[in-house]
Image 1 (spheres, rainbow, N blue to C red):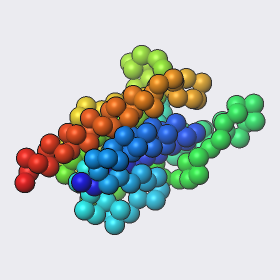
Image 2 (image 1 turned 90 degrees about the horizontal axis):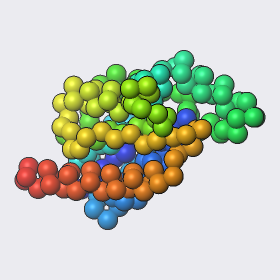
Image 3 (image 1 turned 90 degrees about the vertical axis):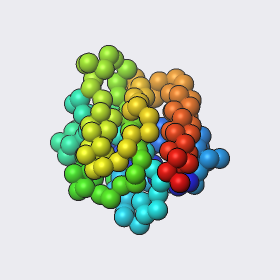
Length: 179
């Protein structure tokens, strides 16, 4: 089984979640973790499932303006933030709008502020809707991983690993039924 994890990350939190998911799935699948700016049709070719994750900006997926704002925030030395490579380039929103050929199955996740979801929104909801429109089938409900002061909350990587394992097990089950 082949799973591709596509992520967008500003300050490294979403990348860390993607890596934790991949680590948990490595015994069940061949897993690739790919920045959205490096995804190509060849990377997705022959994948059985895709997991897509992004940070939540202004209640949804990032936009060029919100990525520029994040870059500006990182340029302030008092913030103590490091902008991820290619963070200001294409985001998951634009990638999904390009209508990529995606595998039959998917799961979506996001990182967001540790406040009630009604206040923060969740990028994973938009990812979920877009992937359904592209014809993929949801393996598990979307998940949010929480950030406080631009850092992952304690135990979020462990939660991500557990969620990732559920995704891989659901993919295994779906693929077994499809054969």
